[in-house]
Length: 295
Ligand SMILES: [Fe+2]
Image (cartoon, rainbow, N blue to C red; front, side, top):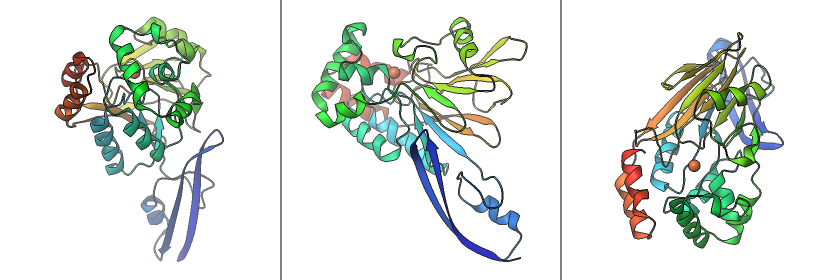
Protein backbone atom coordinates (compact mmCIF):
# COMPACT_ATOMS: atom_id res chain seq x y z
CA UNK A 1 0.00 0.00 0.00
CA UNK A 2 1.36 3.47 -0.79
CA UNK A 3 0.15 6.86 0.45
CA UNK A 4 1.45 10.37 1.04
CA UNK A 5 0.22 13.57 2.62
CA UNK A 6 0.76 16.68 4.69
CA UNK A 7 -0.68 16.71 8.21
CA UNK A 8 -1.02 19.52 10.73
CA UNK A 9 -1.55 18.96 14.43
CA UNK A 10 -2.22 21.58 17.04
CA UNK A 11 -1.81 20.97 20.73
CA UNK A 12 -3.84 23.13 23.09
CA UNK A 13 -3.62 24.22 26.68
CA UNK A 14 -7.11 25.62 27.29
CA UNK A 15 -7.52 28.00 24.36
CA UNK A 16 -3.83 28.53 23.76
CA UNK A 17 -1.90 26.62 21.13
CA UNK A 18 1.20 25.13 22.74
CA UNK A 19 2.63 24.16 19.40
CA UNK A 20 1.71 23.30 15.85
CA UNK A 21 3.47 20.54 13.98
CA UNK A 22 3.47 19.82 10.31
CA UNK A 23 4.88 16.73 8.71
CA UNK A 24 5.01 15.50 5.18
CA UNK A 25 5.42 11.88 4.30
CA UNK A 26 5.41 9.57 1.40
CA UNK A 27 5.51 5.89 2.02
CA UNK A 28 5.29 2.76 0.00
CA UNK A 29 5.67 0.38 2.93
CA UNK A 30 3.39 -0.77 5.73
CA UNK A 31 1.44 1.93 7.57
CA UNK A 32 2.99 0.97 10.92
CA UNK A 33 6.42 2.11 9.78
CA UNK A 34 5.17 5.61 9.08
CA UNK A 35 3.28 5.96 12.35
CA UNK A 36 6.35 5.73 14.53
CA UNK A 37 8.62 7.71 12.26
CA UNK A 38 6.31 10.73 12.45
CA UNK A 39 7.19 13.52 14.91
CA UNK A 40 5.42 13.58 18.25
CA UNK A 41 2.12 15.35 17.84
CA UNK A 42 -1.53 15.30 18.87
CA UNK A 43 -4.91 15.81 17.29
CA UNK A 44 -7.31 13.93 15.08
CA UNK A 45 -4.81 11.47 13.81
CA UNK A 46 -5.33 9.77 10.46
CA UNK A 47 -4.07 6.32 11.38
CA UNK A 48 -3.94 6.10 15.16
CA UNK A 49 -2.26 7.65 18.16
CA UNK A 50 1.13 9.30 17.90
CA UNK A 51 3.63 9.51 20.69
CA UNK A 52 3.04 12.57 22.90
CA UNK A 53 5.74 13.76 25.23
CA UNK A 54 5.94 16.92 27.31
CA UNK A 55 8.95 18.61 28.84
CA UNK A 56 7.94 20.09 32.21
CA UNK A 57 10.28 22.79 33.52
CA UNK A 58 10.13 24.99 36.60
CA UNK A 59 12.07 27.52 38.70
CA UNK A 60 14.67 28.80 36.26
CA UNK A 61 15.13 31.86 38.51
CA UNK A 62 17.13 33.91 36.03
CA UNK A 63 19.84 31.29 35.59
CA UNK A 64 20.44 31.53 31.85
CA UNK A 65 23.23 28.95 31.70
CA UNK A 66 21.07 26.31 33.38
CA UNK A 67 18.04 27.20 31.26
CA UNK A 68 19.95 26.97 27.98
CA UNK A 69 21.41 23.61 28.98
CA UNK A 70 18.00 22.23 29.93
CA UNK A 71 16.44 23.46 26.68
CA UNK A 72 19.27 21.87 24.70
CA UNK A 73 18.51 18.59 26.45
CA UNK A 74 14.80 18.99 25.62
CA UNK A 75 15.71 19.61 21.99
CA UNK A 76 18.07 16.64 21.90
CA UNK A 77 15.20 14.48 23.18
CA UNK A 78 13.11 15.65 20.21
CA UNK A 79 10.40 17.24 22.39
CA UNK A 80 8.58 20.41 21.33
CA UNK A 81 5.77 20.59 23.90
CA UNK A 82 7.16 22.60 26.79
CA UNK A 83 5.17 23.44 29.90
CA UNK A 84 6.57 25.90 32.44
CA UNK A 85 5.59 25.93 36.12
CA UNK A 86 6.66 29.41 37.23
CA UNK A 87 9.47 31.44 38.82
CA UNK A 88 11.28 32.41 35.66
CA UNK A 89 12.87 35.32 37.58
CA UNK A 90 14.43 35.93 40.99
CA UNK A 91 17.87 34.90 42.38
CA UNK A 92 19.79 34.69 39.07
CA UNK A 93 21.54 37.38 37.03
CA UNK A 94 19.69 37.03 33.71
CA UNK A 95 15.96 37.47 34.41
CA UNK A 96 15.19 39.34 31.19
CA UNK A 97 17.12 36.94 28.97
CA UNK A 98 15.40 33.95 30.57
CA UNK A 99 12.00 35.55 30.18
CA UNK A 100 12.62 36.29 26.49
CA UNK A 101 13.86 32.76 25.90
CA UNK A 102 10.86 31.24 27.68
CA UNK A 103 8.34 33.30 25.71
CA UNK A 104 9.94 32.12 22.50
CA UNK A 105 9.58 28.48 23.48
CA UNK A 106 6.11 28.13 24.96
CA UNK A 107 2.92 29.91 25.94
CA UNK A 108 2.05 27.22 28.48
CA UNK A 109 3.28 29.14 31.54
CA UNK A 110 1.93 29.67 35.04
CA UNK A 111 3.03 32.23 37.62
CA UNK A 112 5.44 31.61 40.47
CA UNK A 113 5.70 33.59 43.69
CA UNK A 114 8.85 35.40 42.51
CA UNK A 115 7.13 36.35 39.24
CA UNK A 116 4.30 37.89 41.22
CA UNK A 117 6.75 39.39 43.70
CA UNK A 118 8.24 41.39 40.83
CA UNK A 119 4.82 42.67 39.75
CA UNK A 120 3.66 43.53 43.26
CA UNK A 121 0.84 40.98 43.20
CA UNK A 122 2.65 39.14 45.98
CA UNK A 123 3.94 41.36 48.78
CA UNK A 124 7.77 41.42 48.74
CA UNK A 125 7.69 41.59 52.53
CA UNK A 126 6.56 37.96 52.52
CA UNK A 127 9.99 36.91 51.17
CA UNK A 128 13.17 36.40 53.19
CA UNK A 129 15.86 39.10 53.01
CA UNK A 130 17.94 37.40 50.30
CA UNK A 131 14.96 36.66 48.07
CA UNK A 132 13.65 40.18 48.60
CA UNK A 133 17.00 41.71 47.60
CA UNK A 134 16.98 39.59 44.43
CA UNK A 135 13.40 40.60 43.59
CA UNK A 136 14.20 44.28 44.06
CA UNK A 137 17.25 43.94 41.77
CA UNK A 138 15.17 41.99 39.24
CA UNK A 139 12.57 44.77 39.14
CA UNK A 140 15.33 47.14 37.99
CA UNK A 141 16.25 44.78 35.13
CA UNK A 142 12.80 44.32 33.56
CA UNK A 143 10.81 46.71 31.40
CA UNK A 144 7.09 47.40 31.59
CA UNK A 145 6.28 44.77 28.93
CA UNK A 146 8.11 42.11 30.94
CA UNK A 147 6.27 43.04 34.12
CA UNK A 148 2.95 43.14 32.29
CA UNK A 149 3.58 39.66 30.91
CA UNK A 150 4.35 38.30 34.39
CA UNK A 151 1.36 40.13 35.80
CA UNK A 152 -1.04 38.29 33.48
CA UNK A 153 0.22 34.76 34.03
CA UNK A 154 -2.43 32.39 35.42
CA UNK A 155 -1.92 30.45 38.64
CA UNK A 156 -2.95 27.11 37.17
CA UNK A 157 -3.47 25.66 33.72
CA UNK A 158 -3.80 22.28 32.04
CA UNK A 159 -2.98 20.25 28.96
CA UNK A 160 -5.13 17.39 27.68
CA UNK A 161 -2.99 15.09 29.85
CA UNK A 162 -2.44 16.89 33.15
CA UNK A 163 -2.84 20.05 35.24
CA UNK A 164 0.01 22.20 36.46
CA UNK A 165 0.61 24.94 38.98
CA UNK A 166 3.59 26.45 40.77
CA UNK A 167 2.87 25.69 44.42
CA UNK A 168 -0.25 23.69 45.35
CA UNK A 169 -3.52 22.72 43.65
CA UNK A 170 -5.38 24.04 46.71
CA UNK A 171 -5.21 27.84 46.94
CA UNK A 172 -2.14 28.26 44.69
CA UNK A 173 -2.07 32.01 45.41
CA UNK A 174 -1.01 31.27 48.98
CA UNK A 175 2.30 29.79 47.76
CA UNK A 176 2.33 26.92 50.25
CA UNK A 177 4.78 24.06 49.83
CA UNK A 178 4.21 20.34 49.34
CA UNK A 179 7.18 18.91 51.21
CA UNK A 180 5.78 15.93 53.07
CA UNK A 181 2.91 13.48 53.18
CA UNK A 182 0.52 15.69 55.14
CA UNK A 183 0.48 18.53 52.60
CA UNK A 184 0.58 16.06 49.73
CA UNK A 185 -2.42 14.10 51.02
CA UNK A 186 -4.49 17.22 51.55
CA UNK A 187 -3.78 18.42 48.01
CA UNK A 188 -3.95 15.12 46.17
CA UNK A 189 -7.38 14.37 47.67
CA UNK A 190 -8.61 17.66 46.25
CA UNK A 191 -7.73 16.58 42.71
CA UNK A 192 -10.30 14.85 40.50
CA UNK A 193 -9.88 11.08 40.26
CA UNK A 194 -7.36 9.76 37.72
CA UNK A 195 -5.54 13.07 37.56
CA UNK A 196 -1.92 14.10 37.37
CA UNK A 197 -0.69 17.46 38.64
CA UNK A 198 2.81 18.84 38.16
CA UNK A 199 4.21 21.37 40.63
CA UNK A 200 7.47 23.21 41.36
CA UNK A 201 8.21 25.75 44.13
CA UNK A 202 10.17 23.60 46.61
CA UNK A 203 12.97 22.97 44.06
CA UNK A 204 13.05 19.34 45.23
CA UNK A 205 11.96 16.53 42.88
CA UNK A 206 9.44 14.21 44.49
CA UNK A 207 6.33 12.25 43.49
CA UNK A 208 3.23 11.43 45.53
CA UNK A 209 0.74 8.76 44.50
CA UNK A 210 -2.71 8.19 46.00
CA UNK A 211 -3.63 4.52 45.87
CA UNK A 212 -7.15 3.17 45.58
CA UNK A 213 -7.01 2.18 49.24
CA UNK A 214 -6.58 5.83 50.19
CA UNK A 215 -2.92 5.31 51.13
CA UNK A 216 -0.32 7.77 49.93
CA UNK A 217 3.15 6.76 48.77
CA UNK A 218 6.08 8.99 47.91
CA UNK A 219 9.11 8.55 45.71
CA UNK A 220 12.28 10.61 45.67
CA UNK A 221 14.05 8.61 42.96
CA UNK A 222 12.28 9.64 39.79
CA UNK A 223 14.71 8.63 37.06
CA UNK A 224 11.91 6.57 35.51
CA UNK A 225 8.51 6.52 37.18
CA UNK A 226 5.38 4.67 36.09
CA UNK A 227 2.35 6.95 36.31
CA UNK A 228 -0.72 4.77 36.83
CA UNK A 229 -3.48 6.83 35.21
CA UNK A 230 -6.12 5.06 37.29
CA UNK A 231 -4.70 6.87 40.34
CA UNK A 232 -3.90 10.45 41.37
CA UNK A 233 -0.38 11.85 41.26
CA UNK A 234 1.41 15.04 42.25
CA UNK A 235 4.91 15.28 40.81
CA UNK A 236 7.46 17.99 41.57
CA UNK A 237 9.94 18.31 38.70
CA UNK A 238 12.61 20.12 40.74
CA UNK A 239 14.31 23.34 39.66
CA UNK A 240 16.23 24.19 36.52
CA UNK A 241 18.12 27.15 37.95
CA UNK A 242 18.45 26.54 41.69
CA UNK A 243 18.13 22.84 42.66
CA UNK A 244 17.88 22.22 46.41
CA UNK A 245 18.22 18.45 46.63
CA UNK A 246 22.01 18.37 46.93
CA UNK A 247 22.53 17.86 43.20
CA UNK A 248 23.55 21.11 41.47
CA UNK A 249 22.62 19.90 37.99
CA UNK A 250 19.55 21.47 36.37
CA UNK A 251 16.41 19.41 37.01
CA UNK A 252 13.33 19.03 34.82
CA UNK A 253 10.87 16.30 33.80
CA UNK A 254 9.62 14.54 30.70
CA UNK A 255 6.13 13.04 30.71
CA UNK A 256 5.50 10.39 28.06
CA UNK A 257 1.74 10.23 27.82
CA UNK A 258 1.45 7.12 25.68
CA UNK A 259 3.69 5.03 27.89
CA UNK A 260 2.48 6.71 31.12
CA UNK A 261 6.05 7.27 32.18
CA UNK A 262 7.75 10.20 33.88
CA UNK A 263 11.50 10.72 33.54
CA UNK A 264 13.48 13.11 35.72
CA UNK A 265 16.33 14.66 33.77
CA UNK A 266 19.48 16.14 35.32
CA UNK A 267 21.65 18.33 33.14
CA UNK A 268 25.15 19.66 33.70
CA UNK A 269 25.68 23.34 32.94
CA UNK A 270 28.27 26.10 33.36
CA UNK A 271 27.69 26.81 37.05
CA UNK A 272 30.85 28.93 37.40
CA UNK A 273 29.67 31.36 34.75
CA UNK A 274 26.26 31.71 36.41
CA UNK A 275 27.95 32.26 39.79
CA UNK A 276 30.29 34.91 38.38
CA UNK A 277 27.35 36.86 36.93
CA UNK A 278 25.50 36.80 40.26
CA UNK A 279 28.51 38.28 42.03
CA UNK A 280 29.14 40.89 39.32
CA UNK A 281 25.50 41.97 39.49
CA UNK A 282 25.89 42.69 43.21
CA UNK A 283 23.30 40.09 44.18
CA UNK A 284 23.74 38.39 47.60
CA UNK A 285 26.82 36.10 47.37
CA UNK A 286 24.94 33.27 49.02
CA UNK A 287 22.98 32.92 45.78
CA UNK A 288 26.19 32.08 43.94
CA UNK A 289 27.28 29.68 46.64
CA UNK A 290 24.08 27.68 46.73
CA UNK A 291 23.84 26.92 43.01
CA UNK A 292 27.34 25.42 43.21
CA UNK A 293 26.18 22.92 45.82
CA UNK A 294 22.49 22.47 45.09
CA UNK A 295 21.00 23.59 48.38
FE1 LIG B 1 11.24 29.02 43.08
